[in-house]
Length: 172
Image (cartoon, rainbow, N blue to C red; front, side):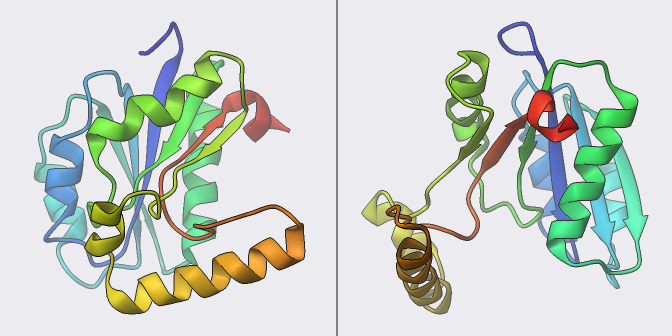
């Protein structure tokens, strides 16, 4: 719990046996629920997720290979059906790309009633940019430029990164 609100984390994972345990084990203490969506994995993702020790209550949902957006939506819908509102739902990738130490900064604007949705930006610091594979870096820059053209707002990281969403917005 953080700022009086329950914190749920949605973790889409497909073939992440090497990372999913660490993702679950390093969740901050403020995380109440972790929903892992094992999205059609052909490796030991499910087994590693069940073996992981986590400060959060972990639920693992298995699917037959949805696209990542559908897996994330399934996690949000599960939280809406199973926990009391208000809450904040945070998306963290199953491959460990998101630093658990950054979770509070992504959630805080929602707790402060400044936003209903917050998106992290992996393109802010040279260290963050260097950690991304070169192909992803290039694609992010191109997609950011195209998104900026289409939306009229400067968008430097349209793909990936942390997101946090209020249950109020998810309910709508």
